[in-house]
Image 1 (tube, rainbow, N blue to C red):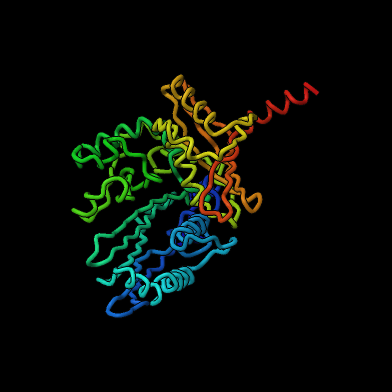
Image 2 (spheres, rainbow, N blue to C red; image 1 turned 90 degrees about the vertical axis):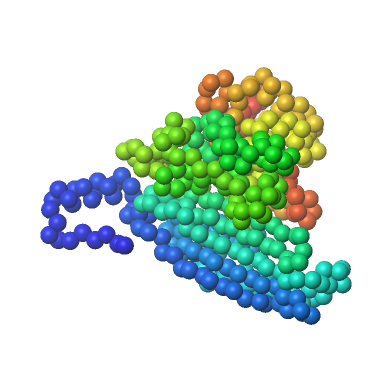
Length: 414
């Protein structure tokens, strides 16, 4: 609801309102996000007793506020897995696009092909949900989830993805809101084992699950959804219909929250830092895809998955000024992590740029903890793709501090 100042208001109240406006910027961010509800249930494809049904139950954020624009792009990329050249779709436009894509992907011709392959039993169901989980004057938290299954067939899948945005500038809040992701993970792991038990080889990868894509900041605490149940804990979803999750109360993890996080969550009276909003990315690139790649890269370091570094990198890599093979990169990572047992990193404030047809550059802030010291480096990764763009690998890794030092050495030697 818009807040309007009446002429009869006292001078002291005018001053208070002015002070708040100066501290927090334009007042529009503090308004509730306009939400349009979409409830769709359709059967766009039928053949020979089979049908494919699409259901969408979505809270779609409308408007042009920074938070709404971030959420709109986030949902566009998740719903359609396509890039929109900077175009922001309204909820109606997005739902029409989803329906059109669904009809194309689940046409009668596709059903005929599946029937020819012997899958003529049952119906297909594809369910999408978008829910506004929490909103305050400073943040907004949403979940996107989907599940797909075929009646009469064991095939099924489900996923849930969380996001929290700052209403001041629309930036996505992630693991940089915590002073130590490793300490946080220990608390989460303990709660998961207490909640679900330790039975089964598939349970949390034997007690060491990777962290979810993102934390979901709520009113009283943070929720951690382990959404891809087909990989981690299939029986939890199948038996309960719920995604495996953990919930940490702010009172229990306040010591692990940064000052900015405490301010944004209303746990302190400080003004949140607005100095470094997430920069705008290239509209030609799927930002969420590379945010996921960056999260995976962080996980390799934080979870000490030494053997998997090789898969992240191209055969030949520009590695902090050196040209090396991916095997050398893996060895370098292994040696460093062995020498620095307390090392952890979190990457945030991502900017993605398409440099040419086969390369994408990711610029970000990388906060590290090593030997008890916390540092922040303006860093970047350059990804290269194969001819059809189906997979990406790191071809260059460095940071601006290293690059400047190398340039200084080069200048002196000349």
